[in-house]
View (spheres, one colour):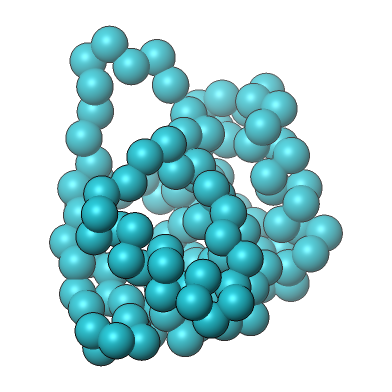
Length: 128
């Protein structure tokens, strides 16, 4: 289940958003939650940072409920809890959410503000 919190692959368009962060000297991780909670420039990229942060932690809680013994998720939660007050506060709220689709807004340094829709795609043979 942790694949939700790691980038296994990305489209060329997603690469542009990632490169925009790299161009500003931002550390790029395969785990977008690291950027979201541990990099002070994250609210510059996400105009709706509060909503995205709330939803991300709620989805992580849902994932933890489905697989409470996942050591990689425990490690990620531990790292974020130690290093981010924003994460700690949200994790402590115990809000759980599962969502399949939505919208994210990004503030790209060259393209300006972008609004992207997303939809979850489940693979029938996927075991996690």
